[in-house]
Length: 486
Image (cartoon, rainbow, N blue to C red; front, side, top):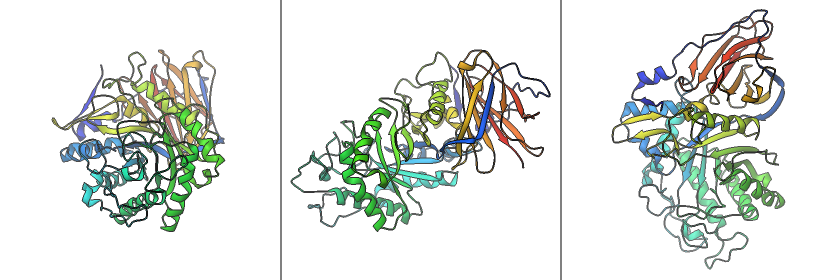
């Protein structure tokens, strides 16, 4: 098993150092292998970024590392020079009265009595800086994160028909509920807006806010059930409350457990006329992975997904569910087939000994260990793709192994083009890239991730008559970054 134990900045630098690759610069020679042709004029969805979370106190685990390992972990996640370049951070909005390990504290833990009573809110400082999520947001932004998405797993216990933040239950006031304490929808919206304002008071803009997490799941931790109609009963209230507070935050919904569950919920929101109030549609990938695109005009994010098998650092052994190559295909398919604007994983870094995180943090020994899944996401991060880029046309033709190659391409506003190619076959392929504009003052960089490499940079390669040729090893993720002029 190939593992990468990262114990300091020097080792980190070696992980992403410029290592040579077998790159052929061809002049007036037709490559015998597959051709990847990009079409910048063919535009698909806009790109928003890649996403991770440190909810349920995992931000605290990073904070408790010694300063060098803490900075190392943050750089691995968010730096677009030495790390994966994640640009969206998903915070958890808490609903717990008390917050032992693996809980998220509420800013309104005490029942005000009546649904219209004046609530008593806690400051973020009074809940340990939102369990260090405020600190993490500031650190992430300083390294390039541009979007904060805050999502609530549940309303507080006294706002729900089961009087419990856990075990599902419904928000009082939505269709099908009849709570003795009345309609708590406005009170819930007020709490979410106050949370946003607390962050604003600390210099952080919450760009998107969600009020549900996996509303199809009745589980023993913070959770709240909803169908499409019930979500639509709340969305306009939250939207109006945000507008009244003169905030720029947009509403996100609904982070269902799987792609098809979210697809099934959307028509209820649309039929009720509430889709117009949404900024983005959000889904997870657990019960069903991203598939055919949703029928919506809104941008779509996949905001949480992982596996729960034993901790796996590998790129490729046998195609297992937690291997890096498997996740490279998930990410590429999410952007290239499902038209997702942001692809996410669950935790960026955590001390869990399964695969819920991309980086394993051992607080006892103060050791940080990267998985290969981290570097799969890095090829789609901010080192290559800028916010506001468009996915563009990209096809594979020719050669004898085109069925083993998957590709996506993105055009940035500055004219650069990032192309990702996955070779799922066992054999090396000589691949020609066509259609990417390159002038005499431009340049091309290549990057490789496989069992032996972690986002390793290749020698700059040249282009002749619109064709750039490189060797793409088997079982690898390979990227071209084409910068047409300097």
